[in-house]
Amino acid sequence: MGGSRTMEKRGHHICQVGPYQIRQKVTRATESKYQGELKTNPGSTEVSIYKSKNRIEGNLTSVAVAAQKAIEMLKSEGKDTSNISKKVIQKYGLSL
Image (cartoon, rainbow, N blue to C red):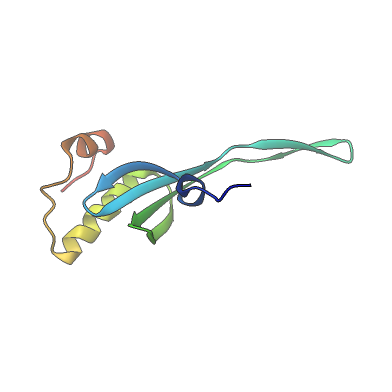
């Protein structure tokens, strides 16, 4: 049995906003039989903001909300937001 990978621990890398990474972990719905009855466990998605290996913010509802929060964190630190990809800004409808 091998060690767990980064994707399994932190989720898939979605986009980069400055020094922050937006990652999304998706858990699929499962069905199992228990004492002859079919039980379903609902799936879930968890979006988090990471800076290198450190989790800054978690349990966000969507990638767009997480990216906007990362931009706000950059502004509050007084860092430049001009190096954020235009593709990310258009895709998630972010406001600078």
